[in-house]
Length: 68
Image 1 (cartoon, rainbow, N blue to C red):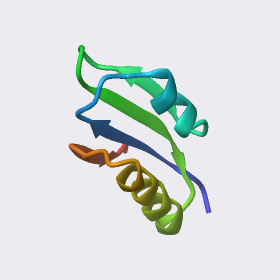
Image 2 (image 1 turned 60 degrees about the horizontal axis):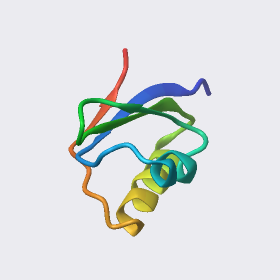
Image 3 (image 1 turned 30 degrees about the vertical axis):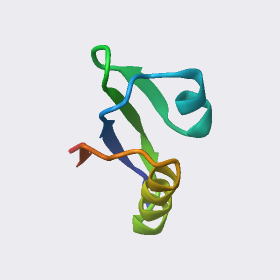
Image 4 (image 1 turned 90 degrees about the vertical axis):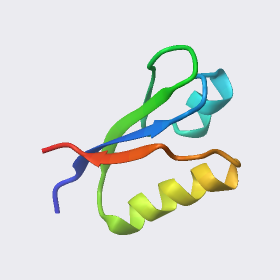
């Protein structure tokens, strides 16, 4: 199975802690209070694990988008 590219938008400023918490993703600042996590996700199980890690950090998720 080929990994699919995902973007996860978080309504949180980019920080070293945020970037280091998701080493498998590229963290990109989108304005002063929004961050995109961009990277490959192998399957739904990995996606759910990634979303759970975000929730465990107490962060909100603004948007999840699979790239075509």
